[in-house]
Structures are given as structure tokens and as C-alpha cells.
Length: 505
Image (cartoon, rainbow, N blue to C red; front, side, top):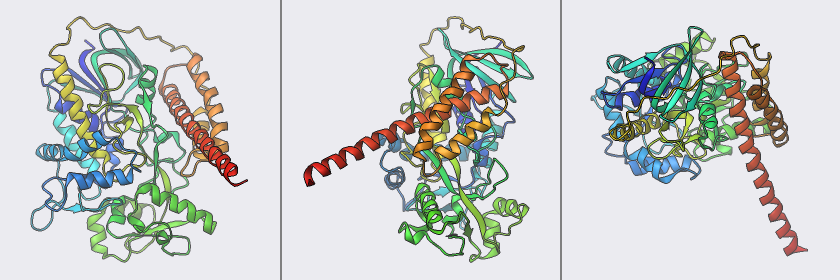
């Protein structure tokens, strides 16, 4: 009863769009860790970047902006695919009922965001992600071959002779679910930090599962810190002030109420996110103050309310009127550019295991994601993954699925208290916008110890354990990669200094 052709882990746009593009004669299961719309997709405000019926823009220009933002560390082939195929998926989701804002003449309204040289961001007010998520979810629910399992915690995934076995905890009962193909679309890793813009489910579970199955993990230390999260020192989830606010002309100001971006980058507030975040940290050091604001009060109040209705209402709840007040902001963990290494069709280094969306590393983002490319990536590559699965299934054996025997630890003790809190503190201290080299090495050693405790100890397999194990694994991998980079850079610097001394003394 629990056998499927494809199991998709994750109910955000990447997971839903994979299901939409799979053949309708396949038996498909989509799992949602908590409620269906609790995902990073639903939180995406700004929009979706892409060239679609855009006479003054081109995929090549979009590609160049993506490469510049990514420090030219992007994968050229997948970046070309992303930009050239954007029109296919933007057109398709419109046909599925997704509504984007339009101008008075009926054309789509395209806004500007940091790092973009053209107005190419399609949006639905300031709730684009929620619009896409709900419309795709509504469509998927009509598909008779797709089952959605809500509030279902994946505890583990194992590779078998015939495919994959999933240990899923639903209503406090563990069940084994099998499939020939598996798609991991579990989103980001934000909860590995003390403060993040991510939703509560973003604990890196899918990355940990893939790593434990032997999948290659790439560029996991490439983490984006959004420069304009609401400066909330009391909540773990920080409300995001969209990139589009700066795109519509907002200014960044320091504690004196002075603009400062002109001191760091000629693109001012429209520089890419990593540049703005680093500029804020430099300004913090210079002024000895971590108080910063985003200010759009010079724009017409009705324009602000109509363009950013959700942000406006949310800030009112927090005690700020963005038509009159400067809004306190500070960098916050936002997005992961690396993750599970995949090819141009979203397949991992494990046969028939695919990864899509933020948990994957397609290489399109380089070392810094260009604004609004995330929703686009979560459409283009799931479609390509589905095409490969559709084709491969035609010649796949129909042998009975093998089921893995998962251990049951219901009588085991709960994990020690405070593990997740310690992991978050280590990451916030060691690897924020400007990494602390000493803390990197100390944090890595401690994370190695925590990971060993969770992997070798016998604990009750519940949400706390699964998430702690995922956070420990992801944090360990991030600092492992960051330490390697720091060591290599130190060796390069030492070599340069040795060469300098040799030539000058």
C-alpha cells in the first residue's frame, strides 16, 4: 500500500512543480513536513526573475547579471539553461492560474531588484511566493495520481536495490514508504542559525539524508545573508524587507540617518546582496553601531501601500509605518547557494535520486544568489528532472520494490536538552557575514563531537532528534568546507609573503 513510482520530499514550489511535470500514469507521493504552505516558497516576497515577452531584455543579459552577482563562480551551462528556459516555466505557471501584477495597459509589470540591469522581476504585489505556492498546490490537489501526506516527518531515507525506502513519522506512528525514484525538495538550512528569514521547517533534513546516502555535497558554505531583515532581536524568524523595496527606491541609512552605500559600491542600494551585507558590516565597524534603517518615506504613501501591502501591514503590527518611519534592519541568514550536488537535470551522484530547489546545488547562483532567481531555479530544474524520470521509467524494471527495515527506538531516551541551541550559537558566532577564523576551527571541533553523539547514541526518533541530527550534519559540513577554504587561503597568503621576502631581501 505504501509503494510509489516517485516520492517527493517537500511541498514547496520545487516539489509541487516536479509532480506537475511527471507523467500522469505514475503513482506519486508528496510529503509535507508540517502544514502544506509552511515553506520558504510561501515566504518569498519579491518575485520571479526571467525574460518572457520582454522586448528590451534578453536571456543573455539576465545571464550576465547572474554571473556578476555570483562572482563568476556560477556553472556556465546550468546558468544558461536557467536564463534561456525561464520563458517556458513562467508561461506554464501563468497557464496554471498564477497571477502576476499588470500595468494599466495590460502588460505584465516587471520590477527592478539589486544586481539586475533590467526590469525583469514578475511579481504578485509583495507575496509572489505565496501566490505561486497556493496556485500550484490547488492544481496538484486535482491530480488523481498524486497523494499528499501533510504533517509527515521524514526520519530517514535509505537506498535499496530497487529504489528508496522512507521512514515517515505521521500521527506518532512510523511507516515505511518505498519508491523507484526519489526527489528531495526540502528547502533551506536557515534554522542552523540563531536568526533567519526561513520558515520553521528549514533544518536541512534533505541535505543530511542525501549526504548519508553518499550523495556529493557542494559549496554548502556558500550562504547568503540578506541585508534587510527586520532587526528583531527577540524572534528566531526575522521578517524580511524585500529586495524590491530597494528596487523601488528605498535608501539604506546608518544610525545617524545618513546614506552610506556610496562609500562602498557605485551601485548604491542596488548592489547585490552580499555586497550590501558586507557594506553594513564595514559600516558597523566604522561607526561602532549596529543600528541601520531602510527608508522609503520619500515615496508617495499610496504607492507604498499598494506596492507592498503585506510588508506595510506586517510592519504596522511591529509598530512601524513605512510611509512615515525608517525601518530598523540588519543582515540575517536567508539562503543557501550550495547543497546537494546535481547535474543539469537535477540528478544527484546517487542513481535515481534527484534534488530540486534550495537544497540542491545546480551551480546557477555562484557564491551569491541574484535576487529572484530562486523561484525560477525551483521551476526550471524540477521540470528537467521530471522529464528524465518520465523517460527513464519507460525502460525501468517493474520488479517488486524492496523495503528497508528501519530500527524502532520508541523506548529510547530523548536527546540531551540544548543541542540545537548550541549548534545555532556556534554558527552565529563562527560563520556569519564576516567569518571569525578562530571560532571556525573551535566550532568545527565541537560540531564534530555533537554529530558523533547523535549518530552513535541511541535516542528516540522524533522531531527533536531528526532536526538536531540534520542541523548538526549541515553545520558540520559548512564549517568543514569553510575551514578548508580558510586554510587554503592562509597557505596562499603565506606563499605570497614568502615570495615577497625572497624577492626583496
